[in-house]
Image (cartoon, rainbow, N blue to C red; front, side, top):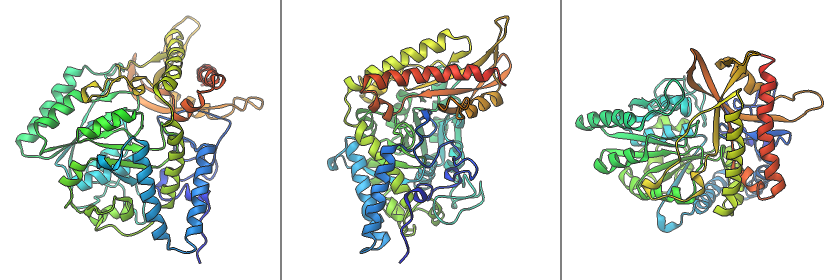
Length: 493
């Protein structure tokens, strides 16, 4: 009998090269370790998260249950049953019941989810935010191309080659001006309406991607414009909300689904689960519209049949198979979501407001930093208002070197990347505290210098911990210490 793999091995299986630990550092592409890292101050949840002690314990417990059950059942049967249990619990924790008729598709990452959705829908045109504000492989995935030379399931393919005989067009919308300011809503709407109306006149089917929230914290494009277009041409337009950050309240999730929008999620950012756990929430209307659409066999590189809800014809061309790594990573994320879901508005908002004030005041007053401007997170157009997700949880900023004469010089993109990497190393032999921030995001130019923004982020585990006042104060102090450390690093560049 084949020995069931160890938890630590499973957690880095069932993904592509992005999840593979570097042999020298033990870290994956996102700078995350496979095991809990108690000396890391985790402020980078807009990029990825390191598994917590709670998540590791949950993954270990599920691994042991699966191993025990495979003594009497096939691994396929155990996997199928556990994926269905995971599906039910995720929907329940999102505030959804059977009467809501919402299904969940699982896949290794947000990029994989978008690739599978595009293969399923096969739109003639997809409209999305500029790729700098979302996943780097998304553009290829949404046009029907392999985005990596390896893949989640067995059988990788050369990067940029076709997944199937379907290919789609892609139009991207720039979210920020060269100076880092958000684009004027009217100009974005004009561009969006123009491209959509032309496509509609040509009888094209469209996929519109509403990003909530992007890498630098925007909802883009406007919910109002997306909703107006979808209501005007419901037969030709499908909307998916790219909420892979998972910075959404239950109320907002339900509101989007009530408008027949699909929602893409991951458990590895705001939730604090380990890297590589994606899901797509599918409203009943979308499932009905696509019920006869079967995925091309090329999608076998990204999905097993059991990852799809029971009865979906989309999975007919997919192989049976298991991805216990995906299952355990989601279990770790679910362990975090169970804790977070118990908090109410009065328990969440005070810390968010306190963190916002402390960080925003520092970024505004310190000449070494420039906070990127973000408009209010307004979801009232879909009927969601007064919820914790209106509070800012991603704080992007540009770094400056300040000369002895007081002149401010923006750090280049390579310098910002160096700062980001050095933050994750101990300052010295006595100081073991290390800081993980959100990876640098391209953000135009300052006085002719191309720059990137780093990001301080609040996560669900932080909000759970913040219920103890001393822990809340410590987390805010550590965020400010990360900024102090950045200033120290500037002098070493």
